[in-house]
Amino acid sequence: MNDLRDYIEKVKELGEYKLLEGADWNLEIGEINQWQVTNPASPLLVFDKIKGYPPGFRVVCNAFTSQRREALALRLPLESRGLELVRAWKDKVKAGIKPVPPVVVKTGPVMENVQMGDKVDLFTFPVPKFREGDGGRYIGTAHAVIMKDPDEGWINLGTYRVQVHDKNTVTVYMSPGRHGHMIRQKYWAQGKPCPCAVVIGGDPAIFAYGLFPLAWKQSEYDYAGWLRGKPLEVFEGPVTGLPLPADAEIVFEGEMMPPDVETRVEGPFAEFTGYYASQPRPEPAVKVKSVFYRNNPILICSPPTMPDKPHSLGMHTRKSAEAWNDLDKALPGIKGVYTIDEPLAGKMIVVSLKQMYAGHARQAAMMAASNPALAYLTKWFIVVDDDVDPSNIREVTWAMATRCEPFEDIDFVRNCWGSGLDARLPPEKVKARQFDHSIALVLAVKPFSWIKDFPKDIKLPPETLKKIKDKWGGQF
Ligand SMILES: Cc1cc2nc3c(=O)[nH]c(=O)nc-3n(C[C@H](O)[C@H](O)[C@H](O)COP(=O)(O)O)c2cc1C
Ligand SMILES: [Mn+2]
Image (tube, rainbow, N blue to C red; front, top):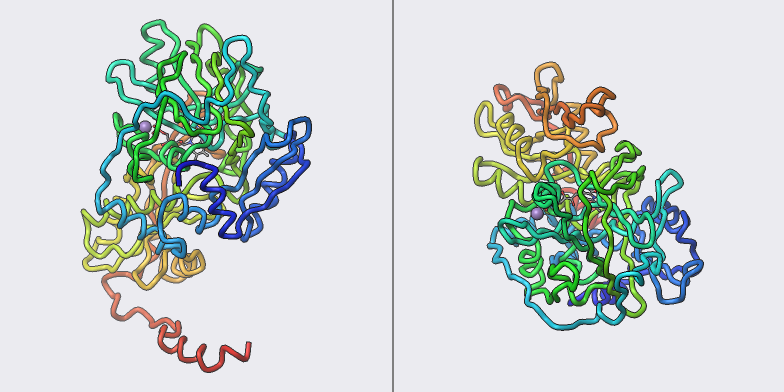
């Protein structure tokens, strides 16, 4: 698999592909997507013959929403589900990541069409306005923003939403703490605009690492190269000198102005929390100077929805897996780490463990709560016993309802790492831009001091269940 087109071809072979013709970029694509997310078997959606656009100028949504498509993009066994999918990524990462840097090439398919200077027009593409309340059209929702650290020289890729304001002006929304947010300040401190580029399409590995938090100075390009098993091919952007993926669908580059030079009001935007929470505010304008795109370009999108399913490419599977590896290094008895995927993916974390000593469960809760992969805007950290499948929300809530004595078993920690997207952030914190919140550590485990006397549950042992199913299953 080299690029997005190969990926879509494979999805088609799996029978998880749907072509829809004649939709409107203005709301209809976004509304169809929101509706389809509530369908558990929702396929990858390809929109063609979009109103007002030439045939072939396509939009793709829902690209990675099924666990099978997620596994395909992440090069994991296609039949893994739930905690097994988490375990598959955990093992892959544990076996060792060897970063593979990109190689520079002279040309590639993305250079089939070029717009420079005055010719730049981002409305060449059927950029959707997804939802009624959105402040405009968003070209970047399943992409990566490419930047270079001016002092240290490494390349960062981050998925930060990109709104189009006019044919050659966009804004990029970055939360405080993001690498791009820190890199751009370095240019502005020297009184310079910040060079940046946006990549859409190419190998899904690019998006997979654009959205995944790595350590400072680690280039997402090199991790994407590891994931795909060969280096990405990049060419040097004529305007910025940044390395740009040669087999992307669309790439554009330009300069992000210092905020005292030029801004545009960004948002509102239907966000992954299920609300319009980040207030519209001025963001630095990016002046786009060059655009490259393939013939019949595919604008891949991943707008947030309710429930928050298609928003990412395996982000929660991978965060769970990597946090699980971290917990394993520190503590015995960890049986699984899972981020509840619906309705709000990644914001309720469950750790399953075999309790071995007094305090063990609380220790696991505290470690999960401070793990860098899990901490951002997460308010609930729940620990369950090893007989509870952390990827099964019914079993988790059963444990909360039956093993947790709230007054004794829930602790609170204040002022943890949050976000401007937090719907519950009180007005005074919004005003002060103090993006933090409290968290709850919930022990939904049998009390360790009398664990042996805890009432026995009535689940059927798996062997018994199998025996009964084998004998009687045909009757149903
Ligand atoms: C679809 C999608 C959209 C995202 N949009 C934003 C965004 O608009 N702003 C932001 O700060 N983070 C956003 N994120 C999260 C970042 O992509 C993520 O934290 C990433 O690790 C940032 O890269 P960095 O660590 O190099 O800064 C988004 C994630 C996904 C999956
Ligand atoms: Mn980074």
